[in-house]
Image (tube, rainbow, N blue to C red; front, side, top):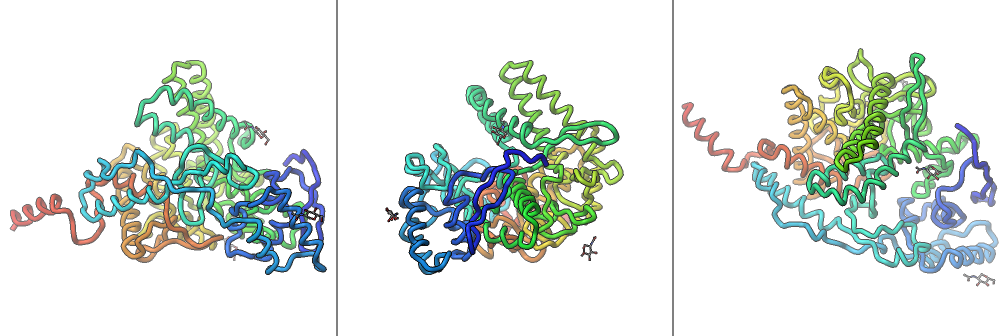
Length: 535
Ligand SMILES: *[C@@H]1O[C@H](CO)[C@@H](O)[C@H](O)[C@H]1NC(C)=O
Ligand SMILES: *[C@@H]1O[C@H](CO)[C@@H](O)[C@H](O)[C@H]1NC(C)=O
Ligand SMILES: *[C@@H]1O[C@H](CO)[C@@H](O)[C@H](O)[C@H]1NC(C)=O
């Protein structure tokens, strides 16, 4: 790690305002939401169940007035900290409850009966799909123009267009959670649906800017067997507690040296950047294995299979966009980047003996052989050079032990208590596995894709019958129940769960079943007839 921009800034501690040295500037310049005494006191007193609550609150007065009022209040007291009751009163005077920046919004192109519903044979699944489709209306949001006119009063960044939010505590726009680069793939889906070349042309500079960000700020050179390769990692150089999980991060780092604290806070942020917050996947214990605790999170030390597969797909897709728009030279540059990436993935991440790709540890120069669905991400991205590699990965998956659970594929086989581990199964990971397997040529892989789709749909459906809700994650065991663990309660809603369920119902609607006895008559009738004929 290169230390640069060494600067000193103040972090208030309970007893005094101590100055802490940090190599890097604060994540944002807000002395209310990102640093400062108000954040520190509200979070360390745990005024709210969830640390995210305070940073979502909107200010009623400009920040300098709020800060001045807080200083005045502090100075009027005999103690260095404001007692909780007075802190609460202060908040109710100067802040509004979270969520005020949004108004509900119904997508104008939402239709009552989208065509894909007709392709779902099972009647119960079809009715359920209609209910899920209805949920988009409750998850649509538009940001009030006040956020644009008074950005200083909000932690939220104004976006001019309406959005779909995940639901629950996730009141705002999320990308994944939060940064894996999917925008180019969204554009690809949009382009395939509309063939709108002008929109593609207009969007391309933003897509390339995102790609440049990853290459300039998240890439690292690695030497394996004497050859140097460039691959990417998650890496956030802000050595402070996350404002939305402030008290947890402070407690977690207790007893560490100042330098180790900063490193841990950077790696926790990098874990959040990865979307896998948190997981044994980012743990490095003394032996360089994934057998640690949250305190051993070392995200930036790892070259992740899924991020690199995703960037490979970005490179191939950006090349195809340039070809569509007639920019042959630019297309060739992205083709070359994809070819370099492929070589790097195969040299650094592919393991021929085990038949899959594994995260690479930059410090121990070794791969991590634990099971994670991300070990098959290059299959999903179709980012491998020889067809037998895809089929070997299917054999790897079958031998991994990860297919032995009734409700889906777990995020790992290690029960760490974190939410991106056993026994939780997450919609995007199911989707990437199923999508990857379904694109392989063998009937065996395609059958496995269908089986996993069936398993996942049944899990979602059974839980929906019980709770009348879609959850952000599910438990791989038991009878349709939401997942758990990690930093917050399981959330309802839920954007990506709904998206994955509807996509699978669209793709496999002709053959998926709810597993209940009432099967659509158009499917049942031929069965009854053939049964009668057999007698
Ligand atoms: C804080 O006190 C100063 C000095 O008395 C006063 O000028 C200022 O208006 C006060 N700030 C607020 C927000 O009340
Ligand atoms: C890389 O990071 C620096 C510092 O945060 C930033 O100024 C720059 O814009 C980033 N590069 C890209 C291409 O986003
Ligand atoms: C993981 O660490 C624990 C505690 O140090 C130890 O008991 C256990 O054997 C380790 N497991 C593996 C697979 O290394």
